[in-house]
Length: 447
Image (cartoon, rainbow, N blue to C red; front, side, top):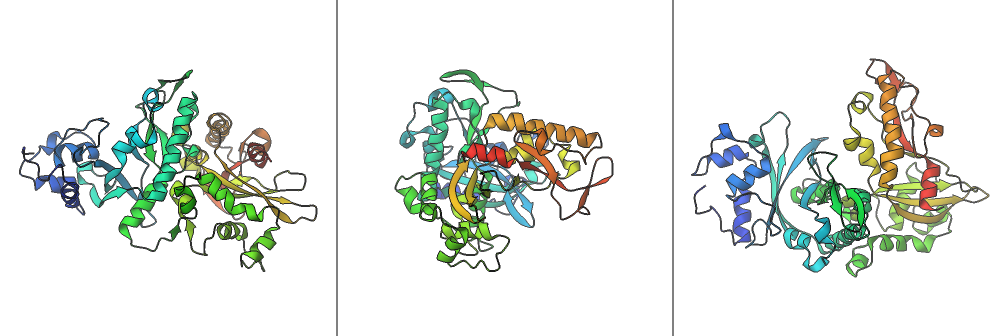
């Protein structure tokens, strides 16, 4: 790279224009067009490192300043994958490491996080496992400034993380604690630990990251290839400083104690005959959403909306299911990166109905909930490990039942007994999935 950079490092527009030349090209193609050639045969390092060092001509670093300090612009390369013909985020976007000792003395307005990440230059590339990173194709380049309604939720997320660190609970942080901004685990090994303030217990190293679901909203808004009907439902309230959780709860307050059918009638939702998705539709109507709209906050935060119905004696009417697993895939998973752990560390929003003595479901409450990380890594892991053990022992018909576990169990999740999947032994066994015990959820929610 010559001393004279092919862009003005003090000009945001110049930097972005240089980045946009990458679209529909690989790094190899882009670097071959530059006057100063690099030796590809000796190339080592990741896509992001090569992008920074050779295309933009600066040395990768962990400086708290943005990468392009004069322009106030932070460069982030992030991978895409194709799911059902659509480009989606392959993973969360890691922004910056969390220094537990330093971050507890920061205020949001002057925080290292805000200073470094207010303006992001995003370079999305298609990750293909069989290709050299130099040959990944860049699909999207854009600058991202957080919309006001998103930034306020991110501020609340940041504060939630900081408050846990201040309380000596860095070891108990879960990605499900927050909506858009997560504190994801980092470190070369899963056993890496570091000191935290106000507690003798060591904590996993973590970094601030934008959830993959949030990145998908950025991707959709960048491409505009399909109508994505995401509508903020509490933007006005959140921008005034009201917490996201309180703003959502307020939407349900006027309907507390009313029968589900009466709520539907008030909101103009037909329930004769009652569709299978009745309760999901009712939740959307209470939130002020139309038939084909989704709550932007729930979509960006990957918040799992669940309906829970309680019998008159307050016992749960049903358990909470997750998608059916593939036996062959499941036995190859490690707990820390397993689909089950990923699902259980998400954030949930429960809408609870209590059946009265006549069997009429009445709205009884709402709760945001994240499974305590100690329960995830004990109760859920025990069920996960035992499930894998029995599948490998060719006992896939006899996976852990509800009576065997405090929080998680396994049971069939297919259309009928003929809906099967192959096991490692080659036999076909009916589809199954993990389920959260309804009684555990009820106790967790305080009902």
